[in-house]
Length: 114
Image 1 (cartoon, helix red, strand yellow):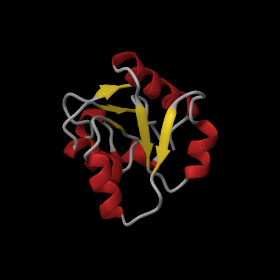
Image 2: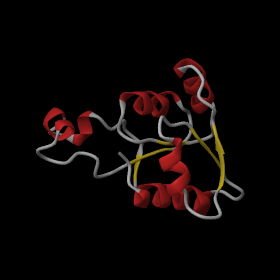
Image 3: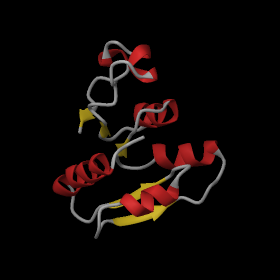
Image 4: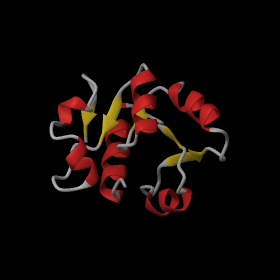
């Protein structure tokens, strides 16, 4: 799972690039997101829809903050804007760490590590 620090750093990254950012969040754990969203950020939460509807909405956004799931990866891949990702999501000895010994196998060229 993404850390509150990653969420804050990602919001800050986009807020420094663009004025008046509105963040759209889709998550299976909106409670965690609400508790860890940086104070003062303008945020809209997607109601739970079908995965296809959520994906189409998120792909159409100007830019994307991804975590490490395959759903998030595809949204970042299909989105035409800036995609940021957790730079330290691969931890040796974990399930994901055992799957991806080389992070470059998972990260799409041009994505921004945060």
